[in-house]
Image (cartoon, rainbow, N blue to C red; front, side):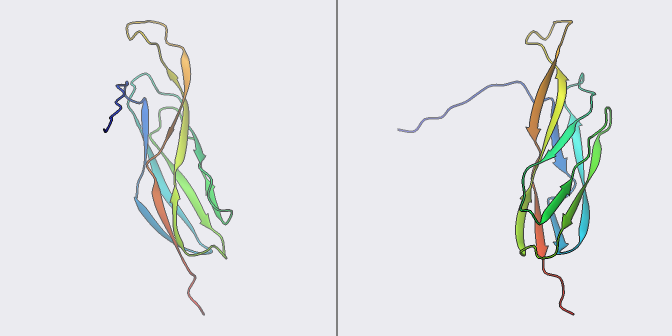
Length: 131
């Protein structure tokens, strides 16, 4: 017998999506990719802290905050020499203080910390050309 579990929930207060689905970066080089936030909750206007999920030690990610009212940030990706060629998946967790109350008619909505992952981007690392 098969079972299906279904949960009905409110929609998320924001979503994160990279500007590209794939990046190809040569070992020893840097690249940038845009990360856009869609603010689905009209009350959510605060900053969003970006935290990259762990990647191998040879890949460095610099993730700034998305300022209050802003809708995108630029993520710096550095592939160090010696990084093994192949595909790597990068995802960012966004954390923000979102006004929320169980009762939608409530006038008082205290801030609640919400953490949501981004859509992933695939980073393809290629070897440096031999000289």
